[in-house]
Every structure is written in C-alpha cells, then in structure tokens.
Image (tube, rainbow over all chains, first blue to last red):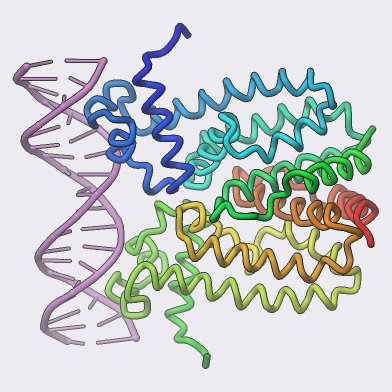
Length: 181
Length: 181
DNA sequence: GTCTATATACAGATAGAC
DNA sequence: GTCTATCTGTATATAGAC
C-alpha cells in the first residue's frame, strides 16, 4: 500500500489511455509498453501477465470510486446533482478509469464486469435515501449510465449527444424535480 | 436487395452472437466460421474481409432500426413508453445487433460509431414532438442509453440492475410524467 | 529494474482444389 | 459455394544478459 513505483503508474496510465482511445484490441502489451516509454520486458517486470495489468486497472477504479463516494456525500448541491453532473465529465481520472474498465468488461473480462457492478451498487446505496422511491432511483442511475455510455462511445467529440452547460443544468433540475424524496 | 443467401445470414448471426457473448476480441473470423458451421474459406466467400463482415452487421442494424422507427410511431401506448420499454428487451433482434455494433464502436470501428449515432438521432427526432423541452428529451434518451449500457455489460443475467415487470412500469410512468409535452 | 532475443500460438488473408 | 493448405504479421509470454 506504500506508494507504488512510478513506472508502474505510467504503464497503467498508458494502458488506460489506449483502452479509451483505441479499444481493447489495440491495448496490447506491446502498444502499452511503447506508449509508456518502456520495453515489453520492462512492462512485464511490473505486471507479470496481461491479467495482472487488467487487475491493476480495476484496483485503480476501486480507489478512485472510494474517493468519489466520499465527495458525493459532502457535495454542497446534494448527492443527486453531484452524481448526475459528474457522470458527464470527460477527462476526470475516475471517468477515464471507468470507461477503460468498461471496455474490458465488454471484452468479456469477468472481474471487470463484477467491479463495475459493485461500484454502481455503492453509488445506488448512497443515493437511495435521497430518492423518493425505487423508480426515482432507477431513473437517476440510468441517466448516469446513459451519460457514461455516450462518453464511452466517444465519436468525434464535436457537439456529441451529451448535454453541457445550460442543457446540463436543465437536465439536473428536471431529474431532481422528478426524483426528490 | 433480393433475399441474401442463407449462409450469409447464418455467418452474420454467429458473428453477432460472438460479439455479444464474448466481445470483439473473441469474434475472430475463425471463431465466427466455426460457430456458423462453415470453414474460414467459406466465410470469406460471403465476406471478403473482416471489414465487410462488420459492414454487414451495420446494414442489419440500419434495416432493423427502420422497422423499429415505424413501430414506435404507431405504438398504442405512445412513442415514449414504447421507446423506454423496448430499450430493455434483452433478446430482441434489434437489441442484439445494437449491442453487437456498440461492441465494434468501442473497439474503435469508426463506421460503427457513426451508425449508432445516426440511429440515436433518428429516435430523438421521432420523440422530440412528444417531449416538453430539450431537457425532457435528453432525459428520455439517456434513460434508454442507460438501459442499453446495462444490457451490454451483460454480467450473469441474474437480477441485474435493469428494472423489469412492476419496476419497469413505474419507471415508464415516472419518465412520462416528467417529460410529457 | 530494465533490456534483447526468442518461443509458441493465433490473427487475417490468399491460392487453388473440388 | 465451400473446402484445405499456406503465407505473413503480431499477440502473450519466457529466458537470460546488463
């Protein structure tokens, strides 16, 4: 748990970026090593197998999700607004690792899917007291999932379907009105 | 446009199923041919390259989306309820091809992403007259995206986060109340 | 801790028989 | 239309030098 070697984090960063930008297929050990500025052998010193590399990313997700849960509880505009608003932030470290792990999950990686569902469940638990009923909670969670899904599809980035600015403020207001306990 | 050879459709079915069940990486020409009960050479007679195979799946998406748009306009319980309800059907042909193509999109396939965005835009156009304002339309689209995303994650299938039965009916009622024009 | 070199397996694709 | 055989590139992983 002490601070991990810097090279290790750089490799993880490179792997994450490749998964986001080019997908699971392109995120090979070779490409990851090149992007991280190390050799394949160097990479394999830190992560002995590809599975270990994937497990490293999942650990990063869990750590960042812990921090986000804490921030959500203490958010001045309330957990619901915080949750919806931050679901659309595109280059936040949590969002990046979330998208990267969801790529792994869609590639059939079982542990990645399990980790994502666990994080989602923790968010739902934290929001449940603030939602009127089950349908309200479902709605909040699904809007957030939808925002992530659209971010994950990526595209050209130009005026995508994800609302920003005024539109996002209106959406948050609507969700709060419809779901408040 | 006349009916395509049956073997062609079987290959496409196999490719789609592999994408859904095991991800892009597992959906190789070899595995697809095996699952379709033909040899790799036989597959390559119908689809000369892997790109042609992917394009075939995108064509299938477009055709099924056309049919869905028509059904949505004529739905007895209204387009919004139809749209939300059918976003969670797990083994509908449209849902299957939609998830399969989204796997391709997440693997970096540009045409797949473009096709998905185009279909989404057509749905949004059809729903716009029925939504109170932009935020209402955003909410409807994002709930649908969220349902697809959760279906796409798959998991064990046992009591996943996607609402069914009573819970789905409540969710639809809530969405309609919050967004009706 | 990081490297080069290599082993083994499998990807997409071609050639040509049936 | 469908097959087998084969070419070429590249993936993960190991061995062992520095």
